[in-house]
Amino acid sequence: AQTVTQSQPEMSVQEAETVTLSCTYDTSESDYYLFWYKQPPSRQMILVIRQEAYKQQNATENRFSVNFQKAAKSFSLKISDSQLGDAAMYFCAYRSFGGADGLTFGKGTHLIIQP
Amino acid sequence: KAGVTQTPRYLIKTRGQQVTLSCSPISGHRSVSWYQQTPGQGLQFLFEYFSETQRNKGNFPGRFSGRQFSNSRSEMNVSTLELGDSALYLCASSLAYQHNEQFFGPGTRLTVL
Image (cartoon, rainbow over all chains, first blue to last red):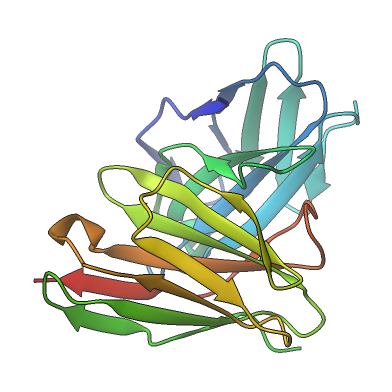
């Protein structure tokens, strides 16, 4: 079974600075998808960014980018120019190409933005 | 386009009762997945439905079941509720089975007393 590990239960960053959230995963598969989801206090899960394992280029969505290291099974999220609205729980998630087990989530990182 | 909707948003039940939660996917989406979120276990996959058929199931007891209707709306049912079933139940919709992008609803907060 796949596992996803987020080693940082909580991170704090000053507004306008850059922060990187870590995620590692374990799988024996070669084709899969990786995601970062944001869950603000409203509890609504919001997709932040997605990466297909077969793509070598790191995904980018505005201020959000990932560092995908397939060999190391690492998938970190970088948030640039942090804003107060970025404060939330961030979950790293894995889905196999066949998707048989749905999304496998990490335990989450609580991101605090200091004004 | 409206997002995923879940009803009810909050629910309080007592042990031994059963409960039914509802999920309406984004218009045009045909696959619905359910997840349970608890402080202890985190987010866990329950099951996925597509074309009115359960395609995948997570590691949950048979008390947890679901179904999908022809309009893609889905319901999940939990029978003989236990205290440990208290959780946020999240529904996610996607365009098709095994599609790689899932969009989540706001969740139903179930409290079992």
